[in-house]
Length: 566
Image 1 (cartoon, rainbow, N blue to C red):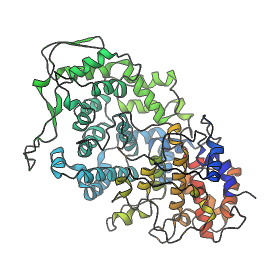
Image 2 (image 1 turned 30 degrees about the horizontal axis):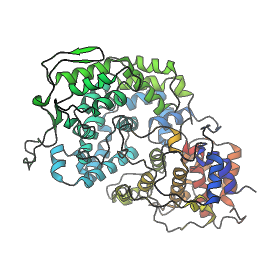
Image 3 (image 1 turned 30 degrees about the vertical axis):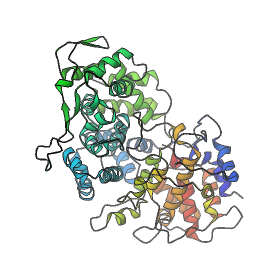
């Protein structure tokens, strides 16, 4: 008889990791030495390779939605099928902000600081509130927005132009950067993004350019501008170019106006060019001469040079490949195709059309592991949350597995992570408490180290399986889906009972869960192992109730490769 332990062993290491147990991400600080639990996981993740599971082909609609949204739903699957992939993509690329008016009204009502200007945020003198509200609004938008591809690209560019949320005035000015830099340009031009980022007070703070003067040029921004934002490593720049670019951006800083108590002049923590601190001597950058006697024009010309450089479009194409196709190096044909769509200023929608129409994309279903935040939000979306003004936010989201999103306590305490309980690897051998108040997705996101805007170095959150495929990260996902299965919904049933359509016949229950949570078929062998593992304890005892069976089945389904890969 197949036990859940057997299913875990045979299910591609639960999340089809096949990766090293010492992967960097996803675990929090704690660890234990439970030999039995470690043996179960280590037998599957001890290899340094990351083979992909051999799953039946995913429907083309599902593949597109897993990459171009924060999680497919039956409704979005139907929309793509009816409109066609190309038409659906065009709708997403051209959809106006007005389509999300109700979502933004909720955001503004619940987290008003996301629409404060820099001066008002500075005068608020409550960085914790500003940080908490931006993170909450970010997750909320990813769950409810109709502009799903836009929200995916907001995340992509937030990683590309990373600003650590805990750095100086970036604690509140990241709110302005998110709104006026990233969100304002996410589906526009790369030139617009780069120009806005260079003037962002949060970026000027984070990469120290606010302290760069003609007597003491600071190279931090210049180096990351070329290495991470534009040309990429090996993109053709030299140490001399870094120094010259640093000189070009001297005087680009932040104005202070602490005496503007009512923000009438709005001159607190805005962008400022200080001509007196600018090095106006001649400079030479990547073979281009910047004449003497100029001011801001030096930095602006550098941005133009970088946007026009062939290495920049190739570097962006390679990052789009990693985000939307595979973890491996991008083939030359793909890079050339996406780079050809660049245009004059870096046409983001044109490049995305090239990505999603490529043969490489169409052949990459299930090739990537979901990152923790992607996994959590995709599950929330599959549980069909609804916005309802008559409910508190906790009530609104409780059935969607994020009841504590408003307080975000898990995110506020990310530096004090609890020890992981390796005994949770086999929690289905015990009864789940039917009165459990529900899981905390923000806690799962924080424990796996994937909190919005909390990556401390300027290279952005990793987008590779090897980083997120750690044992601790696996256990946090396991812990989370078990909790979600037992979560009580507003209609008075658990998520598991809802997902099963309350079907008592095991095969019918699995079919209902598959339709709602996976939106795809599963192979017969996996279906048999799922049903056997959900019905029987490792000791041989059968599930005590249909409710317990539903919860076990849902948890096992959600931790399988079908759910955890994209």
